[in-house]
Length: 223
View 1 (cartoon, one colour):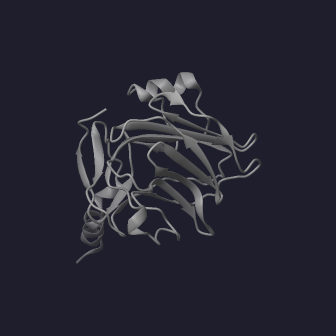
View 2 (tube, rainbow, N blue to C red):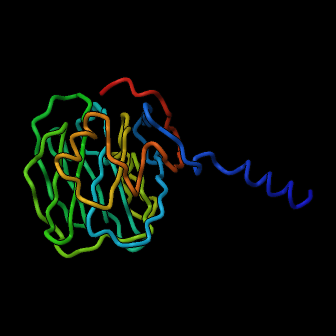
View 3 (cartoon, helix red, strand yellow):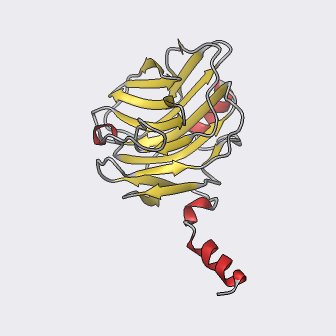
């Protein structure tokens, strides 16, 4: 095989996951509990994060604890983790430290979640279905590390692995965006209504990803 044909063969055998895909109107469906099924989100993040906002939609009928969004660096797990401890109780972990925010919510029902944090004040915020929860503070002066493994559907106890079935997500996740800034209320509400501002870290409309295990892409049929 000549070199040109060899490169064509290599390129066509790469997972389509690494191409940017517009997921508008679609969701990742995690149909079962497992210690393996997940989605890797791929981004080039080369500067430590002093602030961020992550927003997404989710739908699950789990009443136990589970992970939405797990961001680990090589030297530390729970570098940035968005987790649900139980119905009406959300958790944000930064650098291994945790805060909890409580919400009144119907169960089960779809939810739109935004969480943000800034190093200068240490203030963390949750917005659930367009409503702000009580602000909390953690890791003031800290910087979130670079070159992460970002995983949906599992909680990482090691870099890209160490999954526990009892923390796995079962349900649907969509409309996920991430910024290196703290969005204002005027910027969060359009995202809740389906018109997010342009993100600069993760963009559901131009997503690079890799599916591992039993995860299915389906149309979004709820809001």
